[in-house]
Image (cartoon, rainbow, N blue to C red; front, top):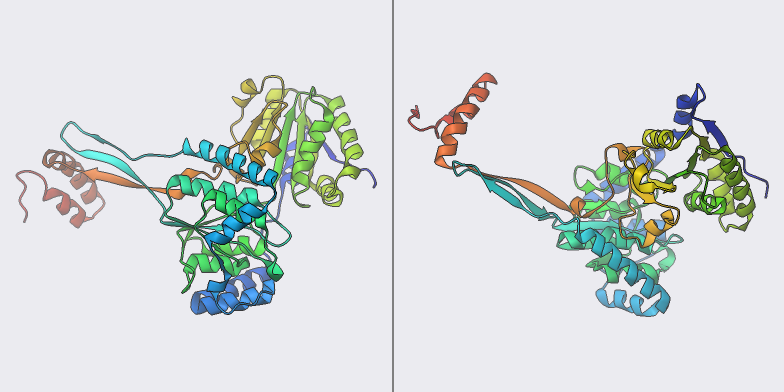
Amino acid sequence: MTDVSIKRLNASQRDFDSALSALLAWDDSVDHQVNESVRHILHEVKTRGDQAVLEFTEKFDRLKAGSVAELEMGQERLQQALKAIPQDQRVALEQAADRVRDYHERQNQTSWQYEDADGTVLGQKVTPLDRAGLYVPGGKAAYPSSVLMNAIPAKVAGVGEVIMVVPTPDGVVNDMVLAAAAIAGVDRVFTIGGAQAVAALAYGTDTIPSVDKIVGPGNIFVATAKREVFGVVGIDMIAGPSEILVICDGKTDPDWIAMDLFSQAEHDEQAQSILVSPDAEFLDAVQASINKLLPTMERSEIIAESMGSRAALIQVADLSEAAKVSNRIAPEHLELSVEDPVALVEEIRHAGAIFMGRYTAEALGDYCAGPNHVLPTSGTARFSSPLGVYDFQKRSSLIGFSAQGADRMGRVASVLARGEGLTAHARSAEYRIAGESNE
């Protein structure tokens, strides 16, 4: 395999900002044919329900069933999968689940209220969603870690029912995914996938209940379908390619850093891996490690394409400038491979997850650290957060005025409402003002 040449940028160069913008550019526009196909599938499932789901499952997954009920896997099948997987896999899944659950239990929000001096009660009622839908990729892709990361926060939040959909092309079932569903407490599992599964979760069919929110990763058809049904149901996010940005002071083993960059590049050709360092010689050393280690990787062709087209080695003046570059990028995963990560994290404003210290490989966060691995991509960490318990809860405002409070604040509301020309609003408030005429 030939060496991969990684783009080199320097924050001091005059055109750095435009060069960085070009590096980060990613076309997330939906292909017209994909869009049309997805809309057709959504319409068919919305109007024909189970029958459309069966037809699309036979067409795309080559799986024929007499009814959608036949495509549901009961709890006994999940428990069977849990017993069937190798013991080391079961132990690893259970340990990861324990850590994910422990972390997310600390996110749980509770209702609260307070009382004004005049007896008025104000507050917030926190309520879990009734039902959540979890999409899990199937076929060649098997992501039991996604099951844990999506289902456990929902269960911790108190969601009444978690419905999982997972395609099983040609009837091939992944027991590790089903075992993860058993461990995470998934309530129902249907072996359907694609846009038809998203449609079934969004609109409901005779067999598959509609949900309040759909979470989980999928291909372009799944992502497009989620985008289309948003508003009918909630969704977690429209995720772009996976990303990692590493800030290193030049004192970490370059092989470690090269492999950390590979850990995202191996996802797909559009994944982005960036290293930022004030040490030019270290950037050279990591480039050498990349070329040395690449031939040893099973997914070397994907990594080579990703690294060659979307990766970069960026030289900066110091770690503070590195933090500024990172904030400009707002990466999904950020490794602070430096002597004092605690000090540097104070300068970080935008990142999905921050991995602190030389021993904190991003891969640990993907599987078993505890925090969620469903993270904002494509710069959206500027305004959004990792998936969490709060995504499966909603908040209702509590307002309870006493007679005295209604009198006092009714006068304020009256002035504002009449200022807006909304007389009924004003008079509704004025009726509660002591001594006011109801005429």
